[in-house]
Each structure stands twice: as structure tokens, then as C-alpha cells.
Length: 96
Image (cartoon, rainbow, N blue to C red; front, side, top):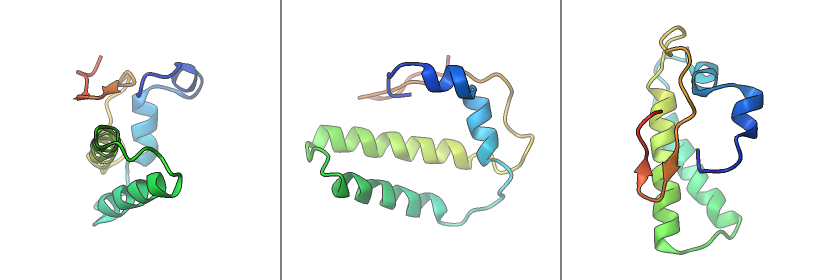
């Protein structure tokens, strides 16, 4: 998603595979917000750059990813064959 080598997608499946792993949990309450807070705290714990553009891009990516995962609440809702999307400094690219 962030432009690295395609090894994970090639070896582990497409975006449909990833989303389907997380589907079927129904309403998860505030889990997405709690996960996002943990991600931001993990960046702090790892002493990642404090650069505002970097932090905004990473937080934006995780917000987008969490929303994408949580949008498929039921098994069977995830379309088959979805390509792994790309996310850049300016946000998500159109799904391939």
C-alpha cells in the first residue's frame, strides 16, 4: 500500500483476502478509534520522525485503512479480486 515491494501481496493474497480476514465481526464499537490511537502511540514509542507532514500522512493512512477494514462488517460483503490499493503522501489513489 505504501509503495514497497509487492512480496506480501504476491505471497499472501489481494486486498479482498485481507479485508475478508477482518470481515464478519459486526459492529465493533470504538475499536477503530482505539486502534488508531495505539498506532499513533506506537509511532511515538518507535521514535519515528516528528515531521508534521510525515505524521499527518501516516495518521491519514491508518485512518483510511481502519475505515476500509471496518466497512465490511459481515462475511460475504467483500468483493472478490480487489487489487491492493496504493496510499501516498496525498492520500489514497483510486483503487486499481
